[in-house]
Image (tube, rainbow, N blue to C red; front, side, top):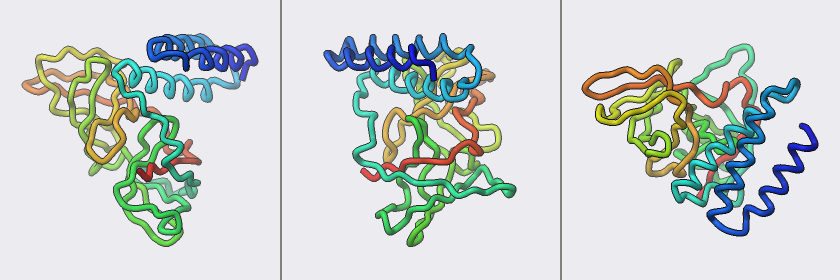
Length: 219
């Protein structure tokens, strides 16, 4: 990662702790720096992930959700490889009852929702991912916080959007379901479909094949 970008991020984040208002401005400045850096070579994927992470955090700060840092109440885990028998609906991780993991706990990475714990054994757990067609949770869209129902699958989508709400493409989708931390990123809106209740296709924030490490929210 470019040294100037690291220095800029550290400097802005240091000053950002001074006040809630400046915190939002600081995060916005960092997001702008990361976006400008996406044209570089070799680090594009890493910068894209950091861009998404900051965008999710910035959206939460703007909407008054200041508690999106879950590191104090989480357990880190490694994801077992499913190669070459990949199944997008599930992941297996290397923690279980030995780390007090329980069904229903949210599984995250970089402020993005990966899924939730489905089954727990002594030292492993099965994660139902957001790509499972049975994975459905209430979500909210963008700064307007428009309600919708997220439905997983090979081509995830949003259902039950109020037809009176105007939604453009590229809006961040975040979790709003009880039992899952509020404000976790899920994807972006694409390909709107008009109707009595609007629908939208979802561009995910990640590819499961790239997920090697996750955190389980225990509180």
